[in-house]
Figure: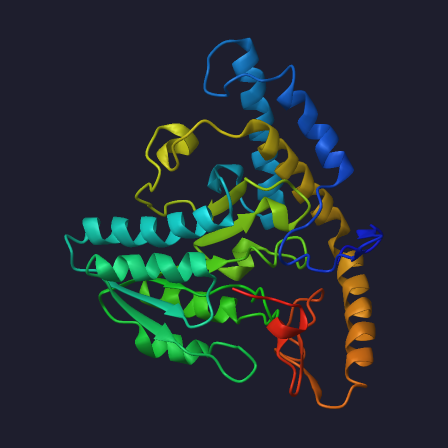
Length: 324
């Protein structure tokens, strides 16, 4: 949900902003010059390339401000999924190599996005050991359960910031603190949270934070990974771009759009969070008038824009005509 912007049509009203969001008109306008006249490769030394480089670095600073991070700590990627894979696989492989194979234990939760879950499955096939922590009836991870599973050979813990289905917010600051006590890196997938709630990486204490452009009114095909200064990652896409952390010529136009979207989201966050909550309450109150209905997820620690309701005796897939 994006208050103040209509995404309705004759065919219906679009409400699934956790799946993707429309690109804001001002973001499109900011991108157009970099699809037309300012098309240079930002890694080229001549004028048109350096013009593109300045645009990329300006956008990097805009993304960093959304997170209260330093621009040098922002790595641009192709999407949130790539950011997650770079964080999980890059951190695990780097720790394994630097410890000469001693640190091969990893921890994650049972409710992660497929990008994270499948990254851990791939690491298991390569010989890493993975512990999976469950959640309670409201979808929350117990920080003490994570703390109990940390071992001397643990290198990384990954728990999402907010759930993309029910919206439950995880106690990531507590989990990050437990990891920091043990000298273990902590990664969180904040793809759904960015633009909906404030994210301050300093107070959060996370070492790695994944973002995606198309979840906050930027285009698809661009994302970012916050990498705390001093954290080492083995690259997944090799090359010299992004300070040797992610190869490939930067997607300048989309990065410019992503940067502006982050700047706009940062300015609008306090007002929008209140509006989201008011809209959510109105929708949930209406749904709960139906007998056999219930709201899922944590009652308070939940994304303000996310409403997940179930109805006894109703199969969701059949209701929308879903078929394999």
